[in-house]
Length: 310
Image 1 (tube, rainbow, N blue to C red):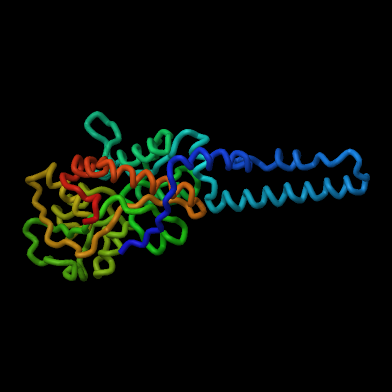
Image 2: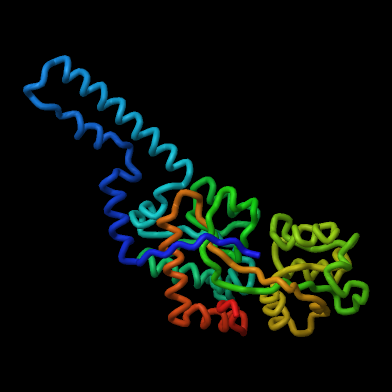
């Protein structure tokens, strides 16, 4: 179900990448390189000097054009992250247990901690940018954030603009209805029904694929409210989100009636043209899995291990 490009590169390569980028003028305007190249030999003729100066100017312009094109495609993001000493991660902050605020107001959750650990492996700080799901990818497009770590799944549409890390979770989808609903027993029963969903999520698209009419929501608690008041007939989401809600609200009059056969995976997206950044993120995920840290976080927030893919 998931089509993920995998790259492998040791963390020891990060300083080398940074040094290479700095030597190439990453993030600069290209003028220093042009100036250094304009010192011709003192014995050259005036005509030759003029030609050299013209060639240097042309080369400078070509360098600036190439850099602008690279920036537009998202290239050089790793160098910018390392130079800034932080990676800016987009997340909702309202999606428990992946990204939410605890009783003290601190941003916590499975994806939040995964983001912090990835940043730690990169040797930088994690800075979180909270926004509604619908605006997270546009924020990455605009350069306000470096990536989105918020249970992001692969889609062909997203793959046109982003590359994806290897999976760090493997989770089934689930279908929830009100406790006394006997009409909906499976996904095929969604035809003509109202489904409470985030309008741009893969689960919303799945519900539409079964013929449901979508009712927009931003959080699991909202979907349950719509089910209980009859404004929606069902909702689709990952099993961990429903499990977390029912664990915190054991008396809620809702039930899960079906699960998908296919497994969905959480991935870390980066803008295309950033193979070096993707490689170190993949390396970080591998280290977290090998050390058992991913499993520990999964059991902490989900009550089960959803990181092994077995």
